[in-house]
Image (cartoon, rainbow, N blue to C red; front, side, top):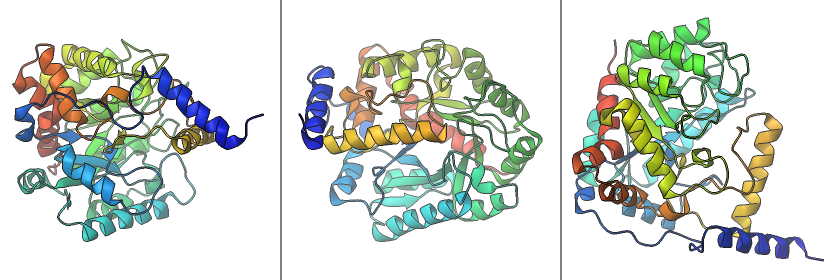
Length: 374
């Protein structure tokens, strides 16, 4: 009989073997791309740290410095929970304010598009406060002003399930954007906040694209035409998003394929399909991951299993999530994954101009347009 520690150790070994012999901590160094140092690289959904909470470690701060990223949209909202969502969100914002105060040489709070250039020129990582659910607003649109003043710049209307704004991607009725949701989009346009349609139901996305006076985003998704899972967006959604001036970010998540661990080739496949549908001016990257390389340790595996079980218990786990498939891409498992991905796209014949747009230029353009009060 194996004790729990032995079982987890063997599970880690088996998982590592199943990832084609890749190292447990970090992908192999990729060929450099000299132009990456000049590029504006923006992760439209990610985090400098892990999910365990607490202050960032020296190693995580070093990875931020090494990443070459200009900015990242970090989730400051409570997600998928109603009780205490407002209080939890304020507490998370306070925690990131502490990081900003502790490390002004590493981080810069992004309130405007101009701050992106400041972050790039100063070699700091711009932190963009974002929501992945509108539940922290409760039934009061007046709370939008509070979060605006606290620095929130991106707000995702729904998570996987239904809320007051509309239906998420797991709702079978697919009832679309509610009256409250229409009012929320209007208020966000007035305040110059970016509407995010990740996790939304199909009709919710289409309704919001039509309702918004400003371009909107899908910060982290995949292409349903390649992998028919609820978290991915149809060609119709992508095409209409682009027609409104928006940007879709491709994630580094299990939903890029229907079985097995996603790899860099899957990311490239979804990026290229999105470019074909949307055009090169409307595609970006939103990893939905962390800056540092993931270490496939027994502790990480155990926590991953718990997270999947908890999400299933809460009813927010999406088809494609599995305890045996991890939320990172092994051959992009490096703080410099954006440079690595850029090199892969260049090697497939994409121009440096196009690659620079995909890695962040398109997000910078969208932020300039959306963060303007109307």
